[in-house]
Amino acid sequence: MKLSHKIGSMLVPHTKQTVHMGVGCVFAPQPVIDSEHSIRFQGELSSHGLVFTQIQNPPGSLILLRDPRALEVRVQQVGPGVGSVVVIAPQPWATLGEFLDEVQTVFSAYGATWSGQQMQVLQRECTVRQLYGVTEDHAFKFLWEQRLRATEDELRAFGRPVLGGGLRFVIPPSDPHADEANIQVRIESFLPDPSKLLVEVQMQWSVMQIMDELDPGPILGEADRFLSEEAVRFITGGQL
Image (tube, rainbow, N blue to C red; front, side, top):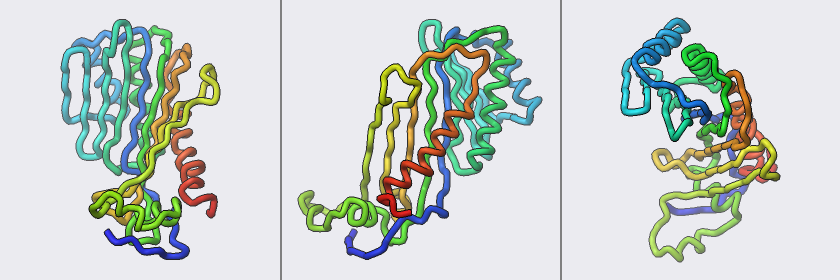
């Protein structure tokens, strides 16, 4: 890859494409995972239009897979007295709003299946990955030369051409007792298509809360907001 300085190269926000979304909660009490609950859970999902093409039952887990419009739902026993629900859309078939609608259906179906339990939510987390185009022909050129203001000569220390790369940040809560997310941000060139910039945020909240039902909306909304605001502001150096 040959780097060449180009004045005015920049991120192109309207090219944003969401390519992965995931959300999950870890809580007590632990769900009973047996055939009765599995059938009831699938019935609740089906009654709201969510039908899955594969069902897997490894010990302590119920895994539902859908294809096409890939969706993965996991109900798991993750430790003594502790369970989790995770929903993942691993391919770019939906908007964040469409994904959230299906996640809310899954979480509501969980509450209807394993009913009568007030949950101690120990951890909430979500991951969102997005692709952006840049006006450079290679996203690493943009990151290296425009955002980091570095030169091609500095890369010669490696002794071989650099295919791509990027940045990773870990941002802890401002107060360990505050209900703020621990944030990990990854910004790097997308190797399958080097003209794209991959931006990923992982958020994890670890302050215990008592909840009657699981609500994924606020954490997915915060991840989307963070990507659109703080992450884009950093990538562009505040130039948009």
